Image (cartoon, rainbow, N blue to C red; front, side, top):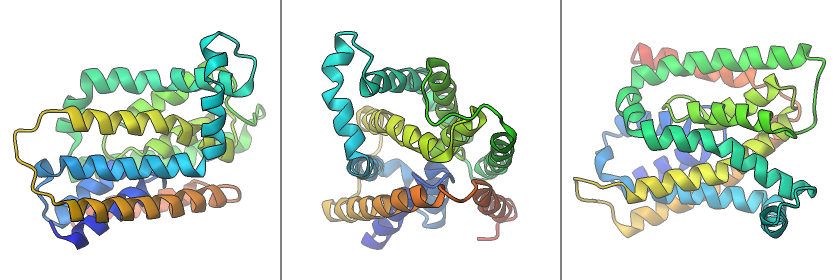
Amino acid sequence: MTSLDSFILGAVQGVTEFLPISSSGHLIIFEEVLNLPVEHLKSFDVTVHVATLLAIMIYFWKDIKGLILALPDFILGRWQSPYAKLISLIIIATIPAVIVGAFFGEQIDAVFRDPKSIAIWFIFIGLFFILGEYIFKISKNKENEVKKWHQALVIGIAQAFALIPGISRSGSTIVTGLFLGINREKAARFSFLIGVPAIAGAGLLTALSPSETPEIIQFSQLAVGFLSSFIFSLITVWGLMKFIKKHSFAWFSIYLFIAAFCILFEIL
């Protein structure tokens, strides 16, 4: 693995973690294209995920700070404050992915870690985006934000499905919010906030999972990957939050359909 490879994979992680096009699916595809030994890159995967997590916390620092300050109220059961209630909703939304990841994570990765499988999921998630935008457009019960536990649970179930490579975590959760009548910007905010424990948990599991192969990556390559992922993460989350104020997620469907076509017919 070269420093250029580290830069490319870091950029891919940073961009695709936030854009609704599946970071895991794109990393697998790029690792195939670059002919990299995926089994040797565990520490690199953890590093670029930490960079992504840091970018989320910086961009949404006002919310992160509010959640931290509301922890005493949450622990004491005083959930009247907005951030204390938000903590409870984040916990509810995180539970499905924790359960599925703990019991079925390895099986999911083994079955679906294949470019052709990823292409199929690209098609399904692209159709899901189009349908979600249509349902939101005709929905009469529109809400400004996630307020109820059942809304958080449904979005959490969508996040659990995103453990399958090829299904975007941000895309599935945000568009599920559209199905529930929540506008894109508020659904995106909730999606990225529940992404904090999700990304942190995924990185921790990767770090703690036993590896039968020696690591071959150098510190300089980790540093390049971290900086690349962090910078592209900040740029992408800022750009996406601006984009979704006025534009439909159906635009991303076009990209997913083209990418799926290229993968299925090996046009790479």
